[in-house]
Image (cartoon, rainbow, N blue to C red; front, top):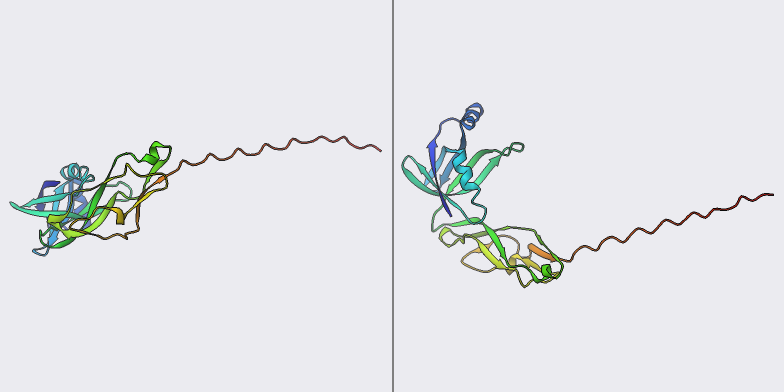
Length: 202
């Protein structure tokens, strides 16, 4: 998936200036790469958010248009306010078609496991995976059919399909597991009835 975003150069670097920029509906950012020195830019918040919300399902690239020139990039890093969750800063890195790069690829699990149909439940542990490859070889997503999984089965990095890329995570990292339903806790034993005793009289 490729998004196109207009950007403008910026010269402001002070905290107060960056705050004023955000109040204008812009997000401070930077674009950099081997063929481009780190360049401070700003993008429209609403325009970026529309793209960002669509980027979770597959690998996404951002075509940054700056001064009439188009730069093919990937969102490499982001800073988010811990309370408001607003974007404070974005890092866009140039993507070279022949260079080896790392990408975070969404995982798409299709099918309903047999174990779920027979009473179990599916626990998903990881929804993305990191790979290393050339940009032109990077898949938009990795799809796995999990319909044959039984209760107790688990899916690991080493079980994923192979391609023109290398997985960066540990091969034994679990992605999901089909578990049996939890057994209801046994009822607490009824409290023993108090036995009344007659007071002994001399």
